Image (tube, rainbow, N blue to C red; front, side):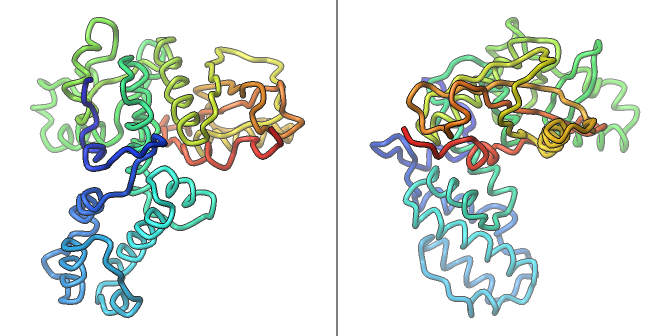
Length: 327
């Protein structure tokens, strides 16, 4: 079985009998090494002591007084968010259960850690999948994307990578003439899909989301896997190229802009933003769906602003689906 997304920390967890991931000391220790939590050079003694204590025992109890003793207010906030996350995961007993609890209970969480959880869950849900278009599209759920038009089609590239390229071009214009910038990056296709495996953690492949149907189908399959894994319901998700008379009984915005577009359509207003992806999600017979949504599709809306930056919100697929009806 091929390995991918090593940075997710998948190898530091243990899969439970029900398929979800146990919260292990090794996983928490890896998070403690993140720059947001590693004490800076000017950190106070209290923060250094707390960090050392948790490295020795990631599940060690921490009092409010120990947090209050940290001199740096940003440090106090970071530690408070991390410990709330840790305690929620420990209480729920799994990564997936903890992630769902964070969303459903509205527990404040650092966005970077929320993305880390989404990647870890997707790594588990997609274990054994060998379709690279699906795996590359799944990156959109936990890594913001920079969108740009090429030949009239929306292409997506990792936002952090795009910003790094822009910075290099700004500081070294002559070098930029040789490295080619975004234009020099590989666009995922049948001819080079095999190379994705060796650079899955580098996030260097562009996806022709607007012009390649396989890219949109890949995102549909990634969403299917995410929903199926967390809700344990075998939903079917399909990309829609055009729909003039949608049965808008229920919708979920996959981005903030997607939610705004759906709200506008729901209220009969002209939508703002750009709808760059439209999908239907169907539940199988017998699923616990609200009665008025049985045999009706749930619409998933993927939108961006004018700058084409894509920031997906997979958490909307936790509490935003029309679930809760009798089986």
